[in-house]
Length: 191
Figure (cartoon, rainbow, N blue to C red):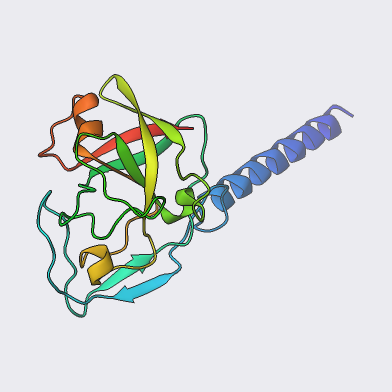
């Protein structure tokens, strides 16, 4: 009887380990874990008159750039990459902001969100809290950091944004005490 109880316990342990390993493997597999956002397609690059303020990445002819229709899920502390962008006319932001069809000066605390987070303008005008470097600041959502389109005049001949971008004005960077020369910093944000 003792051998049977040990056999049942061993078999139960085997099934628990197997189920755990199977769950772990499926959560790590691209496209199957909670909160994944996969590439939707690729945009063929086209170079042009790329305004070089804030040292943007400019499209190259023939290069393929990933496109995303989605962004990671928004949480109480969403991980993102803060990039530097001027929303002034004639600068690297391209055309006027999508939310209000206006330009914004570099002293305004404004941001553009990746396509999935921008959510078809649903976050326009919202204040989001951005945290980095032990500091936090509130900034107004005024534009989309387009994760699908790019490499054209409207997008300053820059590639589509990644799916996890908060593109911020110099005022946001200054309020966070960040070095503008970095151009890209890991942050968290929340609504």
